[in-house]
Length: 139
Image 1 (cartoon, helix red, strand yellow):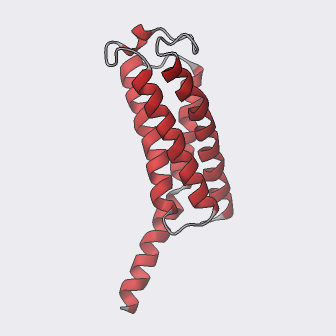
Image 2 (image 1 turned 180 degrees about the horizontal axis):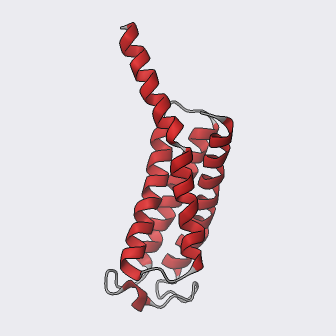
């Protein structure tokens, strides 16, 4: 993976994990949305309160932290963890936009880096494919 792409993905994973580790607990500790000043009505009945979304957001933070560590250590499975982490956040933002709509600059501030990270992580997938082709040609 090219160094700039690797640094970009590491930065995105760290940024998203930090945000999830702050925002997730704020949501599940105050499921009425009071800590983040978001009314429950924003959920439009998809959830009764912010408890479950807070747990999901925290879990996404864990996935991003695992992806960060795997990529930092150049784990053989870094591609998987990075894909789960950034793919998970991509789904999170898509669902968020579908449920509440585009309401805040913060959605773009947290969502655009995910798109950048997904684009920058493409060499991980490409490298996996090339390694598989090399093994097939040797065997």
